[in-house]
Amino acid sequence: MSIWEYANPKKFMQTSAWVLPWAVGLTVACLVVGLVWGFFFTPDDYKQGSTVKIIYLHVPSAMMAINAWVMMLVASLIWIVRRHHVSALAAKAAAPIGLTFTLVALVTGALWGQPMWGTWWAWDPRLTSFLILCLFYLGYIALWEAIENPDTAADLTSILCLVGSVFALLSRYAVNFWNQGLHQGASLSLDREENVSNVFWVPLLVCIAGFVLLFVTLVLMRTRTEIRARRLKALLARERVA
Image (cartoon, rainbow, N blue to C red; front, side, top):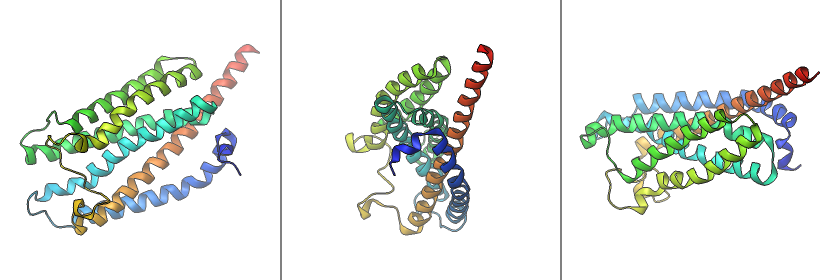
């Protein structure tokens, strides 16, 4: 069985209909366990106090904001190379979800930064690149809405996605590229010395799993909606011609 079989809208709809109930159940379980554990059953940090608990929203949403764009990039490349409509629709479906994650990360980052840094915002390299990524999300969504022909819209948004990937990369690795800046290093790393304490680390991993599953669930739902909308549009066009 080839993975490209799932680029067929009928096959995608059948498979996603089977996957979605499991994805929803796992998403709810991970989010409830992770957030309740993190916010109610972990201690305050000796430096940051209770504000440290914002990591259970900020870190997963920031990770998914970047990874959502990466998923859109892969889907866009598939569209450019193989012209599979499901991939283009999946990228379109992911954009509002990625934008929401980006806004959540920016807002929670500001809420954490004010007591820690004494300011709601700083033109830190990572924060600045993250803000630009947010603007690219807005531009991507607006471009889809502005162009009537879906294939042309998919072509142009795919190019925009390629350009915006630079800022997705900067958002992820800005702390490594520039030593200066207020933003702290990674909360999770292959280097155990850079990880937060286990008392925060384990529930954070559960929250991250929940956010990943939430993204997958919402992308499947929205892609199914996009496929149905395109089918309905095609049927209405045929009726007008007839």
